[in-house]
Length: 165
Image 1: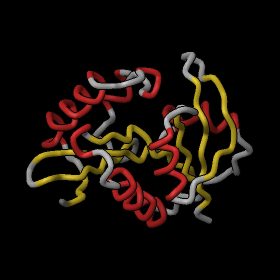
Image 2: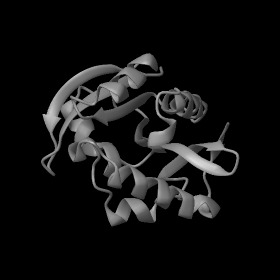
Image 3: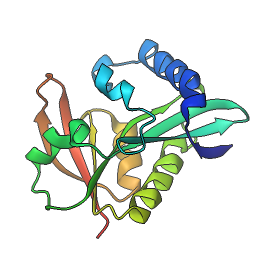
Image 4: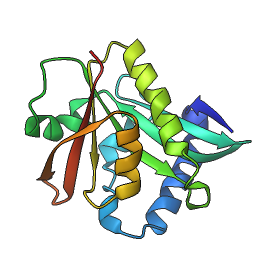
């Protein structure tokens, strides 16, 4: 298995993985609906960088670094964030057949290193309070829970942070 940056050539595989995740959710509140504006920027490096785990040619997991407050601004308002360079790790997903193999953790470790290289000071992530596997994976990265809040779209989320500087 190999981690690589997703490009426009991977769009169909990413969309298929998202469809599988959405269709097979045990709890729909664990996954935030994806807005069209966000989809339009999936391969815009100034906004989003997706990385994925591939088993041969098949995308089996993915996660993104978001650099735009459109994605994480609401969460930043809920924590005592520094006036610094921020990124969010989000849209983390693993094909159901591949879960339990630390794929999400491996991809997100890679994203943390990319964020460090880009001079990011703070990484944020939001997780449903009852999504224990995701919480454990993000805690393993060194992220800590800052607060719980109800987003403007009605979804409850814990905000996790990782200070890089």
